[in-house]
Length: 300
Image (cartoon, rainbow, N blue to C red):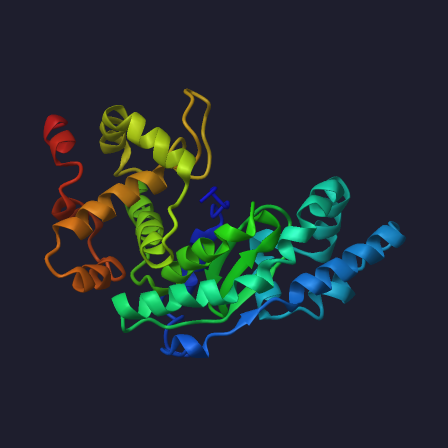
């Protein structure tokens, strides 16, 4: 997957993780996929193009929007005024993705297949509504108390949408999200979503980060061990300093590698999935994976 800017996900997940499970069905067939907000956005967009002195994104989009639009407002859409500012600056970019956003409606069957797969691996799973909305080009997806929200304008192609939904669906299931997570904790939580998202969708995560990480594994593992207990994410999650040629979000790659090794080491794979979604001690999870063991020994 191209990294879909999940940088803003943490705050929402901290609030939703304890509350998200109970109200939603355990039957994948009961899950609903809502795409009406995409049509509403483009109607508002066309009104804007007819008269650029007005702001139709309140009355014609946000005010009549689904719970998904409301859930995508904090830190993303923010307000009708902010959305208008972004549209004015990036009008051409919105125009380029219009056709792709209209393809979201064709992906429901593939997305629901990932729900069936998760039900197999994790029978306790709950399946919230999936809302396809259009935001301010700053987030491709997140999970909140009312469901999973996908920023349609950030999707590079419609074929990747089932993976994005799968990743966020895993975040929706995760419990015990730490407050003020360390780099290790945050990387594992994201890595679990990447690994299990791939497991249930059949599509891999960030190809660029994966390729770079595997190519520079030794150096990166040594660096990560030195940094993992701190809360400074720079050069690992949600931004890079430019000190070298690394891509964004190598923390996802690291978390994926730890999670995959944990899964491979576990004799009961379904139990391993259950444990991944209910991690209480991330250091213990790392130790049981064995992934960074030689680097941790070397650092002592």
